[in-house]
Amino acid sequence: MLLEWPEAKACSTCLFAVAGFLSGVVESLLIAKGVPQLTIRRFSTVGGAVGMGICSMLYGLSQSVFQATGFYVLYMLFLQSINAGIVPNMYELGGEDSAMMNSSANALCQIPGFLCAPLELLLRRYTGSWATIYALGSGSYLLTSILYARLLTQKSARELLEERNSA
Image 1 (cartoon, rainbow, N blue to C red):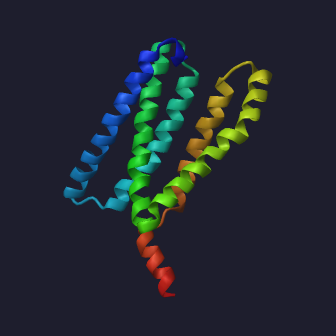
Image 2 (cartoon, helix red, strand yellow):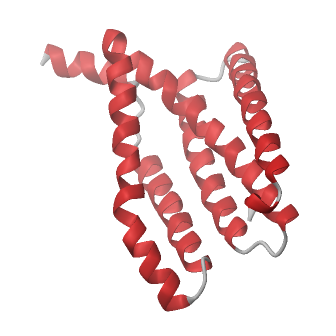
């Protein structure tokens, strides 16, 4: 749908960059107010995944290019929220290996795109609609965010590694 209005894609990309900067500013302000970094990162990750799931579904149900653009922009802003939560953890946990961890994680994240394409094609042919595919994607965002929130510990990755190494 965004192919009908290429300016929308450019606009969303610019907002994505601005959101990245603003997420850092907000995190710094929250840390200055005494909110633990781990809490901020977890909220960013879970909130971003839930927001992406909702926006993905709404994008699939959009009736106009303007609605689709709005939901796409919000989707990208929530993606930046996830990045604000995950990337610092990669650096904290990975140390000198953080670049390898980040590239490995990104490579693994691409696997569903390759594996799900045939399933998407079958669903599209069977249902005649993209909405089912967006519903499945939204459901996976929501399910994984619930699992992530449920499995959280109250310790940082560094603390868990130190405990494991000292045992």
